[in-house]
Length: 87
Image 1 (cartoon, helix red, strand yellow):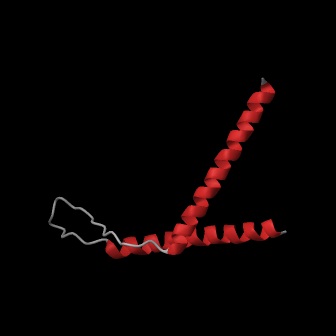
Image 2: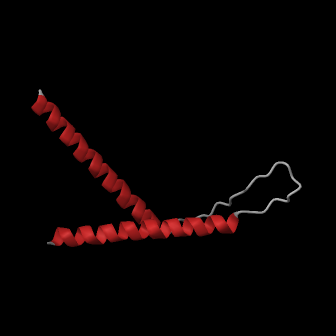
């Protein structure tokens, strides 16, 4: 029962962090796009870099990486078992 609780907490943190990161990224892009005068033939858009990423985004990135690593490990084990069984 404890692992179900840990899974639910981890999933909610991952999904919440991903949604928060998407919202922050889209609002950041809207704020930093600068307008270029219309007479300029070389129109370019500049983006400014900000320093620190929110902690929830780093946590979601870590959890996502861990899930991807576990999934890849499971797929590798299953592929090995299938290879051994089929000869």
